[in-house]
Image 1 (cartoon, rainbow, N blue to C red):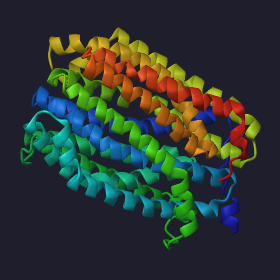
Image 2 (image 1 turned 135 degrees about the horizontal axis):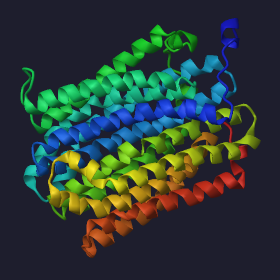
Image 3 (image 1 turned 135 degrees about the vertical axis):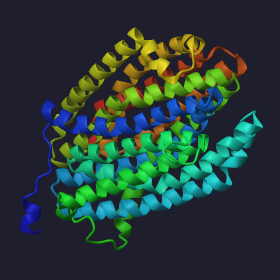
Length: 452
C-alpha cells in the first residue's frame, strides 16, 4: 500500500463528540428531502384536498423504491465502514464502483415495474378511476428520477462510511432549493414555466435529484475525496465485491421494501375511508419523515460506528456505544413529541385545509408523535444489527413486525371500520416488534462471530 494511503486514518472513537460529528450532518442531509416532500404537499394542497390525498398514494409508492435503494445504501455503508475501521482504504473505491453498478440494475427494474405493472395494481386497489389515472400518469414521470436517487444514495453510503458526512449538506441544500423553485414554477405555471398541476411536482423532483447529484459529485472531486479513496480509478466488474454487496444488502432491501409496501397497503385501506382521512394520513407521513430525521440520522450513525469499531477489533465497546447513541436519539425524539403535542395547530395549519381538517388530524398526530419516541429507540438497535453484518436478522424482525402490522390494520380499518386514529396505533405494534429481537440479538453477543 502506498504511503498516501497509510497516512489516511478513518477509524472512529466512541465519544459523544464523534457521534454528533457524524449524526448532525446526516440529519441535515436527511431533513432536506423531507422538506421537499412537505413542500410538494403544501403546493399540491393549494390545488385541493384531492391532490393532497393522492400525493400520499404516489409518495408512498415511490418511497417503496427509495427505501429499497436505502437498503442497498445501508449494506454498502456497513461494508465501507468495516473497511474504514480496518484502515483498508484501497478497498473502498472498488466497493463504491461495484455498488453503483448494482444500483443501476435495481433502478432499471423499478422503472420497468412502474411502467408495466403498477397501473394494473393501482386499478385493482383504488376505488376511484380518475384517481388511478392521475396516479399512473404522475408515477410514469416520477420514476425517471430513480437512477439519480440511487446514485445519490450510494454517495451517502460512501461519505458516511468514510466519516465525511459533513459534505452531505451541500448536495441536499442544492436539491432543496431546486425542488422548491421548480415545484412552485411547474405546479402553478410561474416564471414563464408551463402550468402542469399535479404532474409538475414529479418533474420538479426529478430536476432537483439530478441537481443535488451533480453538485455533490463535483464537490467530492474538488475536495480530493474521490482521488483519496480511488473512487474512479477502476470501473472493471468485480464479481466477488458485487456478490458481497448483494449478500449484505438483499435482506435490507427486502426489509425496507416490504415495510413500505405494507405502508402502501395501509394507505389503500385509508383511501377507502375517504379523501379527508387520506389527506390527514399524508400529513402524518410528513411528520414521520421530517421529525424522524434525527432518529434516522442516529440510526445511520449506529450502523457505521458499530461496523467501524468492530473493524478495529474493539467489540467490547459496542454495547456502550449503542446506549450512548440511543440516548441522543431518544432525547431528540422526546423534544419533538413535546413540541408536536403543545403546538399541533402550528404544524397542521401549513397545509391550508381548514379547521375541520386540523380537528380531525390532532388525535392522529398525538398517536404518531408517541410512536416517534418508540421508533427512536428501535431503529438504533436495528441499525446496530446492520453494522454487525447480520442483515438477515433485520429481515426476520421485519417479517414478524409486518405480519402483525398488516393483520392489525386490516381488521381495524377494513373489517371494523374504526376511525383512522386506531389504524395509526399500528405504529406502536410495528416498532415494538422491531425492537425486541434487535435488542435481544445485540445483548446475546452472537454477532461477534459475524465477519464481512
